[in-house]
Image 1 (tube, rainbow, N blue to C red):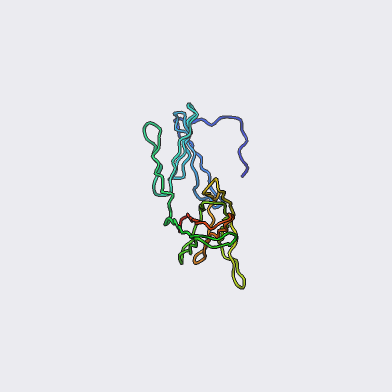
Image 2: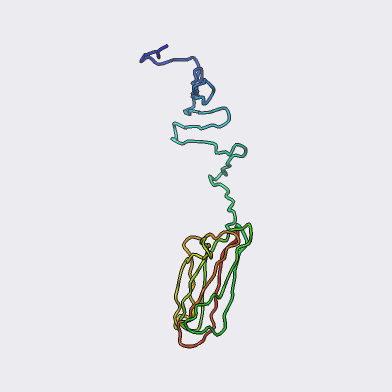
Length: 202
């Protein structure tokens, strides 16, 4: 049957005599709409409600995960629980090579990721009394033999002493693979070099 086309209002004896429902294609109950005579419109599916206040222009709703509802304090504030950002074991790996000769690239620090874990490499640091080059490797590349992918490189000077490199986003290294720091002495005499690997295993 076609909709009834009329400009005449519908009148009832009391407020709430007429209500409306929004249903799906199977005519199942989805939403009900009613005006309760006090300047509000309630939308309800039988469990969740949304109230529109015509006089204030406010919208009142319930936020729920299906079990618990978000509670609002009397002053309008809400209580928030901040979860810890540490989701695994912190790793601080340090090692040193004494008397590294000039122009002899040498692995100074190696960290092997624990089986069943993923290592999130966050920062590395190198230090020495003279000029040096430090190459960062990780994430094994398949091959014969397998090789490690270069992740970064940085240089230290005699004036600086130490350099710290923080990755904009953590670099994920899979289980059993390694992260290494390879140093090259760019000075003219032997010197001690120091390396640090920092991250989190999850």
